[in-house]
Length: 403
Image (cartoon, rainbow, N blue to C red; front, side, top):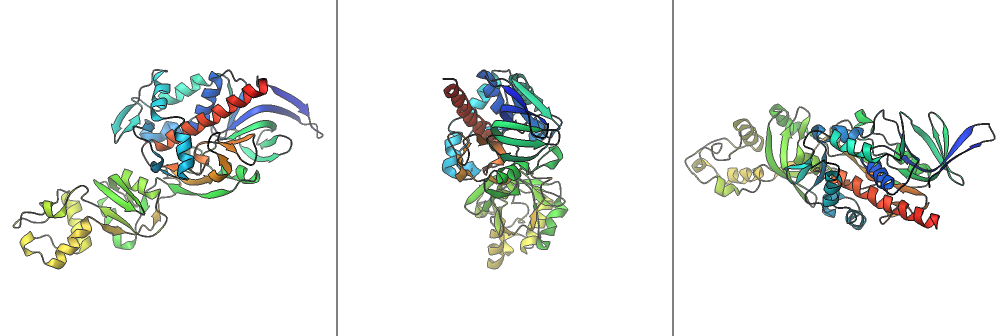
């Protein structure tokens, strides 16, 4: 049984002692406590600086929460691949869907294997709220400091707590509008862990002056594929006032640090097969919108004319439609980023338990860990899987402690 004790410190403060405290009330924390409550845990304290639980769940996927993907693989993530695979193997997309289905929530595929809630993200939040019967949520409470004595000593904006086992599930600084912060990294550092710096990910790109023509196409979208490093990401590209966005760009942004990328504006199409009618204009054969075609041709320096009038040099330039070079100027920033790359270094964590290798009573789960997925439900899948791995470890600890 999880118990709460009190003692009076030398300064006369009444300090509560908890067996288990979870920091954060997002996707990973909620999945964790749902698993623990099912196993008979009680009196778990969950602290969060937000006024509501599951704030990021609520706004994700346009308010319909892209809970997982039909196909999830270690290659969909930026992170140490063997670590990622070990965690994902414990809890699959099928497991996520069965968990939700048992509570009457049946997400449906909308596109590219992505599962979304039928009505709203509140369906998922309500499942977790129901499953968290053993939890005391303390909201609007900020953790200011932590240090390790015999147990963990937490200082919040309200009180001081002593904690035997601590789970940090505080996410990242992405999307500060719904409470994103770097508090988890700060706490991890104070407990001796090293951090890969957080950086905006799954975020649109700003463009250099040479590509300002893209801003004039704001609102237009088109299917593309983007080569960035060793990765090729396919999906829609959306032209925006600041630059370019859309699913393909968001996923590509995860792997881009600096330098050049290549955009294929005619994915899965051979240029020579598209441009096969010699007496017709180029623009009439590309199959793209007129505004986009006109802008692309101008950007690569080719006049729109019948194919028969093209020079060899112009044919070479047309090949850029399949590999348009772009060096992003930067990104749209944390307020527009769906997640962050970076976090607690995985070489300091046990993939089979999510336990710190520096302290057996300390755990990290979800986005605070240096594992980040592409767009399409992969980050929720990581949050849920890492939470289940952690729950299994805590359950095993409890059983061994009871014997």
